[in-house]
Image (cartoon, helix red, strand yellow):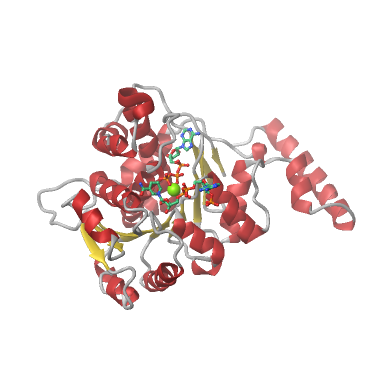
Length: 363
Ligand SMILES: NC(=O)C1=CN([C@@H]2O[C@H](COP(=O)(O)OP(=O)(O)OC[C@H]3O[C@@H](n4cnc5c(N)ncnc54)[C@H](OP(=O)(O)O)[C@@H]3O)[C@@H](O)[C@H]2O)[C@@H](O)CC1
Ligand SMILES: Nc1ncnc2c1ncn2[C@@H]1O[C@H](COP(=O)(O)OP(=O)(O)OP(=O)(O)O)[C@@H](O)[C@H]1O
Ligand SMILES: [Mg+2]
């Protein structure tokens, strides 16, 4: 709650903003840009303890129980992969399985399928993404899937992108939660209407993908600005889909709330870390939506799921880097998923050795 003095300052600030707004209507540069300069969003309330956010994630993790049957913990589909990129869809799909999904499917091209199958017998790999009936071939599986990850290793082939458009439309029709990453974000930047206003979409751009998307949607790469404001603006422009801007700190927003995850990770920037995040996120999104807002204290389930996936990925990075240093790979990080998940979400201690992660919540 704001203090009395704070309330007074807020009133004064609001008065100045009103005057400034009126003045700016008459003259000057875009209102938003100037207001932002004069009153950056640092006036927003910030929460002191990210442990609270981790607790919300714990609230949505389903218990393991003898009475449950295969599939109930989650059935995930990854749409991606192509002859050049076979690792990314594997990383995303196996991460979903190791976080706790029961089944993990990969819908990929004819050429990539045998390669991905060779990585692991755990995955169900469908060689359909470049077939003439790709959309129908994937659509028939949708009733059995709880969430999709679209984009890892997809590449930018026009035929594949066209098929993925149809898969996105079919998934939205069924209200399936969709995590969009990598070249799926390339597709959204070309055609934002594909996910405009779809409240069950979570976008996970890295630094470059964020700027490209912001440029496409807002005509401004938004780089170097207040990151909270930038992520909030992009989310709002896309109809309040949830956006995770990955980086030194991950900034997450659904256009209203904004949250950072700055849990210690590693300074190793090997490829595949974003795929671990997107695969993990798809399971947490399914669990959070299933648990509902009452389990997330009224916060958006997608926002809580995104925070959990960011914290988990960074914890994996930290644990793997402690063992492998500069030689750390995404494979090493995926091997840490079990212990990292237990440390974060299966114990009451939660924070690593009592050192609560730092972060900030803006409302
Ligand atoms: N093991 C796997 O299968 C993995 C596969 N992966 C998959 O790879 C796909 C692409 O993903 P990525 O855009 O994040 O990476 P990468 O294309 O390297 O671009 C990085 C940055 O460098 C830039 N850039 C690139 N080439 C350039 C050039 N010649 N000269 C100058 N700049 C150049 C490039 O610029 P851009 O082309 O984006 O404009 C970008 O800013 C995606 O589907 C992902 O899932 C990853 O998940 C990792 C593991
Ligand atoms: N400078 C950084 N310091 C610490 N962690 C970081 C930094 N940049 C990114 N990360 C973390 O690394 C993970 C992956 O982010 P990254 O930006 O590498 O995704 P990406 O480029 O999409 O990865 P991929 O190679 O899988 O496509 C995220 O958990 C993110 O929080
Ligand atoms: Mg990526």
